[in-house]
Image 1 (cartoon, rainbow, N blue to C red):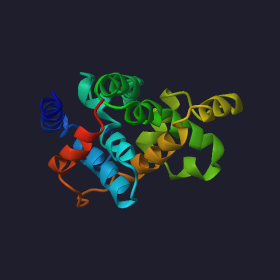
Image 2 (cartoon, one colour; image 1 turned 30 degrees about the horizontal axis):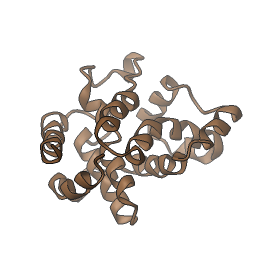
Image 3 (cartoon, rainbow, N blue to C red; image 1 turned 180 degrees about the horizontal axis):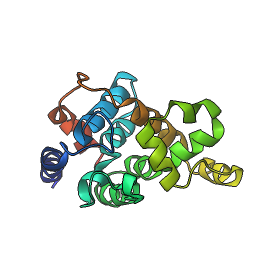
Amino acid sequence: MSNTLVEKIIDLFEKNGDSEYGGEAVTQGEHALQAAHLAMEEGCAANIVVASLLHDIGHMLHALPDDAPEQGIDDLHEELGFRFVDKYFKHAVAEPVRLHVAAKRYLCAKEPEYLGRLSEPSIISLHLQGGPMTDAECRLFEQNPFYRDAVQLRRFDDLAKVPNMEVRQLGSYRTLLTGQLK
């Protein structure tokens, strides 16, 4: 099952990874590989690397148009991705995937300069996702044992938008993916 699932994920990336990444200068696949590459370069634990690779898999699973956010549609990719990832992977992978959008909202509330560093497409999606968290939402978010992992993943997510960045190929993550399965 593990090899079959990993091959299914690789096939999904090959089939849908060339789709536009919400108005950014990279594709969905490039974005995912860059996020995972940045996590590897930072020396992160395997769960963070795999979560970074899979954090936006929900975008590859739905059938909405690439410009859904510009049409005022929140695709809820974090929930769709979480349901897929949680079915097969350890909770330490799935939970940061679920929380990576909340982490953006959290960082906007906690670090005033963070909002100014977001790309235009991230600002558009931020408004669809509820905007910066309130103080009460921040306190609740901080109670999740994986909130720090989600914030770390979010920072890689924000940086993973560089055209033509040299990164590891998807196949090089097979062992890490397999090691994080339930």
